[in-house]
Image 1 (cartoon, rainbow, N blue to C red):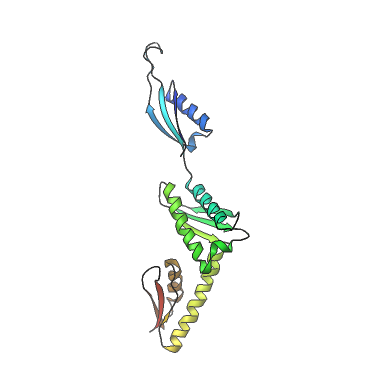
Image 2 (image 1 turned 120 degrees about the vertical axis):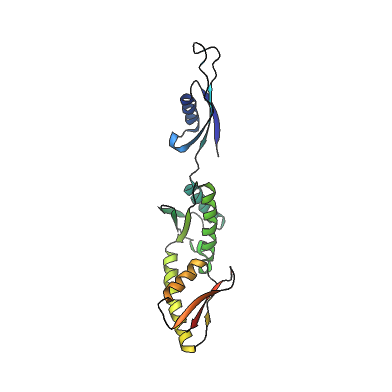
Length: 206
């Protein structure tokens, strides 16, 4: 965080001096008054300048965006476009680029890991907790459709065979998609089994 200490005859003058040196406006600054100063006799004798510390506010979303750009470059995915959608405490980063598949990984595992790391980065600089979702060229929506179809197919298998069917380990939000997709099917029940990162869903006939 870039910070400077500035002085002036008044606090206002000291702040204006600091803003000019940092080349920012007051809304992008964090200001701490060290000494309000003293005017002195006749404005000269015994006077003491005002002292302030001024630093640039860090934008957590921009920090997260920079992190994603840097990781993409180091992973060999090159330059990517990062669009942001924010709704209150929900922040969604939408990634696109020629080699975006490198950032998705097998069954979205790389994307899930990046989402976790991005959440750590953004909340390191945010004043309040932000919940991050990372998507790459609509992968999440396509994955959701795949999971719903998988759930219905394996539920039918459990009904026909009369045996439990265990799915592969999944992150919690993907397990929730499976549970939700089958919640109205009265012929089967679903439950989670195991410990993360090996926690998985089991579909069992009733």
